[in-house]
Structures are given as C-alpha cells and as structure tokens.
Amino acid sequence: MRVTWQSSFSLLACLSVVAGLAGCQDVIDLTLPKGDKHLVVEAWLTDQPGPQAIRLTESADYLDNSPAIPLPDAEVTVEDDRGTRYRFVAQPDGWYVWQPAAPADTLGRIGRAYTLRIHRGAMYYEATSSLRRVPAVDSITYVYKKAGIEQTEGPREGYLAQFYARDFVGIGDCYWIKVFRNGRLYNDDTGDVILSYDGGLSPSLAVDGLTFAEPIRQAINVNKLFSPKDTLLVELHSITPEAYDFLAWVRTEGTQGGLFDPIPTNPPGNIRSLTSNTPPALGFFGTASVRKKRIVLP
Image (cartoon, rainbow, N blue to C red; front, side, top):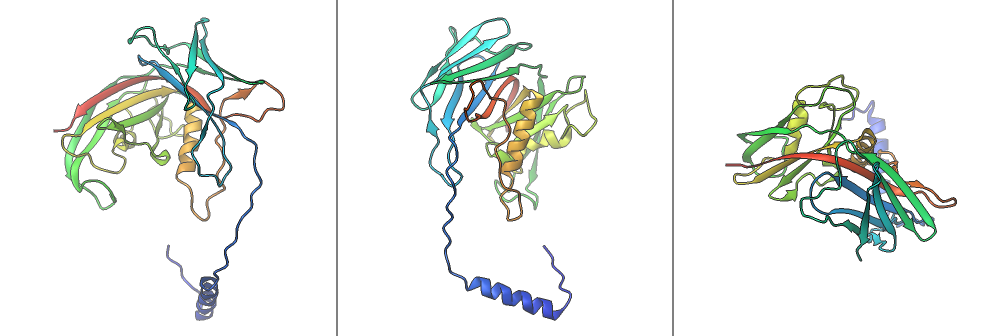
C-alpha cells in the first residue's frame, strides 16, 4: 500500500505514535462470554455408489481451538420423496454411515428430493435437498510451461491444466468443482473452493448453456502447476442454489482475516429445528450428482 503524507509534521506525528505503540508491552486478556452449544451438521450426499456419511459435532466458543466434539448419540435417517428410508449408523467419532446392500448401490438419484431427519434427546432437526442434473466432464487438457511471477508455491515448471464441460440450457444450474491430485483433495482450503453458476463466475453474469468459462476451467490449478506423472481427477458436483450460496459464504469467510475485514460469522444453513427453545443447528445438508474425469500427466 502506498501512502502519501501531506506534510513533514504529519509524518513526524505518525512516527511518534508508532514509536509509542511499539513501546507498549501490556498484555490484555480478553474474556468472552460463553455461547450456546449448537449442533453442527456436515451432510453432503451424492449419487455415487458406495457408503454415504454424515457427521454431527458440537460447536465451540470463538477462542476454543480444540478438536470438534463428536456427537454419536443421535438417530439419523434420510428419506426420499418416494418413501424410501435410509438409516445411518452412528460411529464413535461422530460420523453416521449408510452402507449399501451391494457395492454398486447408490443412495442419491437425479430428480429425487431428500429429507434429512436428526433426533437427539428431546431435539428434532430436519433439512431438505434435491439431486439435480449434471453435465459430463468432456476432457482435461494441459500445457507444459514455466511458473509465472504470481505463483509462490509448487514446481517452477510443470503442467497448467484445464477441464472442459458444457452447462445445460436453463438458468440456475450450480456447480462445485473438486480437484484431486494423486488421490488427495487438492483444493481443500476454504479459500480454494471452486464454484460456478451456469458455467460462469457468478449469478450476475448472464451466461447459460455454454462451455464453462476459462477462469473456471483453469481454477483447478489452484495457482500452482502440476508435476509430470501426477494423477489429476476433476469432479463436477451439481448442487442446489441454496448450497451454492452456503459454499460461497464459506469461501468468503475463508479468505478473510485481515485487520479491516468484518467479524467472521456462521454461514446460514438449511438445518431447521422442530422443537421450541432449541438453539438453531449449524451446517448444511446438501446433495449432489457427480461426474468426473481422470488423467495421468505425461
């Protein structure tokens, strides 16, 4: 940041203040009031074969950096709009798992609506979501190059990749793009969440039915280059507009932390409390249909 001072007096006055602040060694211990304990729900279900999992934990106070407290004492079920009920079995670490009868069985199916129900003690919670259409990931291309000046991490030479997919015709298709490098989620930081609205950057851009915009296609690099022999997997998750808004809020909170940024707040979720005098739940229940493409870089 470049600052222009209007007079030498102003500069001297400012330096005097800074010197005074630098000499201050007092430590101030802040005592914050204890907040209510809230149920925190992590529930993202897909149409992919295999087990599905939901996690329940308890919220912590603002300055509490200890691991989340698991809540393995609830009853968790998911029911679709045709009356099929899926029971999730509690695990000691707070995860609740649905196991398919056969390895190829799926819980999620495109076009169905789903209701999550949580019963814990005298408290009841509920949330709904629907499984929307998803386009195929047509291809992943790459070009070998040297890192630009904007890259601060990763190899100095490597592959810049991008994926190709075409948005469906019709306003309101929302996407969450996950990237895996050598089997590990690559964009796992909240600030690296890749979202797209109708293949564009945001709902404010009037695009629809086109190939995904280049900034979205190239965002899978997460400002780094891939190395030779890396395995790159791109997953395209079709999510609801409500899930898009939730994740956009999470991404914004994950990129803040500066002196002049607003106070962090919990993103508004979709978990409703059905009992009176119960603190609202935090988190989100989302469903996604997924299409993917994997390549090994040469």
